[in-house]
Length: 461
Ligand code: ARG
Image (cartoon, rainbow, N blue to C red; front, side, top):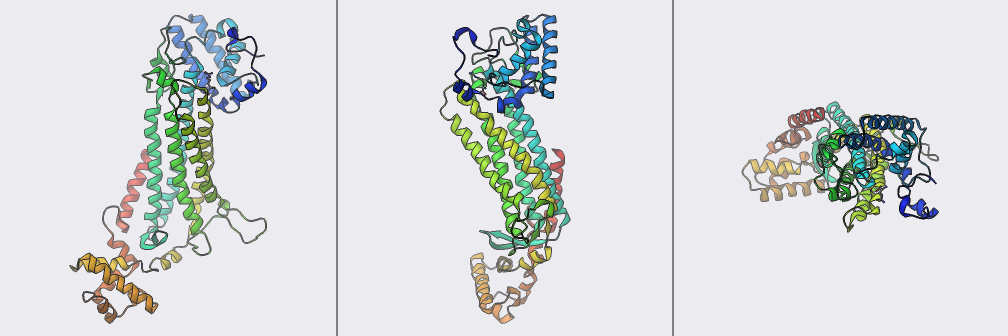
């Protein structure tokens, strides 16, 4: 067998099915370079504590460099006998440094504090990649908003026509949500940036090691305050899983709209060929698979979050082997988003909007009825009365099969004595849109301001 980590107490090696159940190298191998970085830092604090001579430290660091090169080149890989990445790399170190030196590195550390530290390191780097990918999606939305400063569409509530809005306003609403996802990941990082290294198995180290020095070398803000918490807590992983699931859900909401917008009934937008798929049987088909995969993967990301929470629920302190189940859901969520984000940016950036069609639909369904009511309010009519009067206009127009702007002067007076012909000034889509000029509203000037602020925030990241 290979180098066992606990030979002393055991008469036999693990049963085959036990080893198969226990093995994690097929997924935790991606922590290998973080494990080696941790080993370098650990070797230095062992040296400073007087537990490695300068020569030994030098030999150890050289062996770790050689090991890392072999990991990167693929010359060193885990075997079936290696339970996890930490065990495999200890074997690799001993093969390179010899058993008497290589065997010294394990002093004062445990796989429990190693894995908790390295998982944080991996996640912190992964979160930065996800942030970059998310900002590319925001960039695509911003570019579309900039390219369509005047385009309008029927804004919806309950998916029913509600009030006309600027397309840019609508696209930036998705941009706002995505920027909050980015901000959430950055804020998460402030809590994730503490290093459990030096916690040992759970109780801390008796060897005079310096967890703060290790933390600093590994890019953390500080060491954990409590070694039990350091080895047992995984809320950093659950919180990251939430941030990623929320991002997935926000992407799925954009995706759902693209799916609807590209139907024959809507035809608000056409997908670029590079970001659509065809059908093996129906020659006319152009399918929004990117958007559908976004919708589908959001379910998977939610599953990764809820699965991890279920794993953590009711686990006693400190480390339990259940915690080995913490990594795959996060590896998966990040992997899926790294596939999805560039495709979403590409799809959104190349979407071709049919602005004439959207403009034609914008007033349909009496989307200007609120404008009638608010015009009356500006004439001093109580909103309750104004709402009734505008509702009567809608009923009458619907009976006649005409638009609100096509009601005659008599029709208007019949609906309300206060309704004078001047109301027609607000009965146009541009009139309605530019009247909503309060901060955050859909008036072109407000949307342009919002676009500037949002672009500045993207630049700041
Ligand atoms: N591979 C384990 C994990 O991912 C770390 C090893 C800790 N094992 C143990 N028996 N204490 O959590």
